[in-house]
Image (cartoon, rainbow, N blue to C red; front, side, top):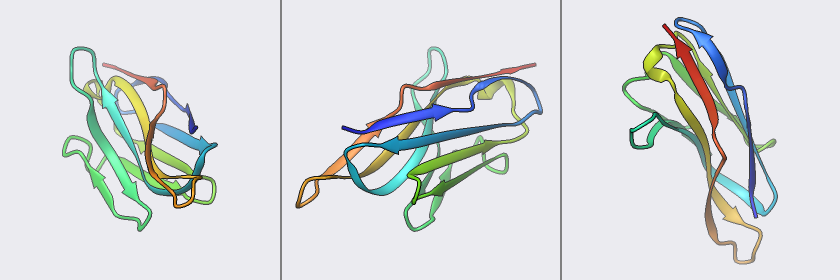
Length: 122
């Protein structure tokens, strides 16, 4: 059983910055990729940014040049630095981790955090 602990959300004015953190614990032997997804009211959940164990990053077009994803695999932690925030960035942000469980042979798993609210005022 994997638990994801998220922090860093809050209220910020347009043009401001926030840094989200997510740490995984329990029931995971290794991490393949970590990422951040977001869901605005009435909208489908979308990928904002992701990063693989090899350091390959992927960003939604709407956040390129403004958001930076990074990770510390030793700590099983992923960060999302959000700069130049816009009101349209307002959403619940969910942490996701993909990896392998503690069984042998290990089995693939995908786990989600509970979400953290990011609100950007105009």
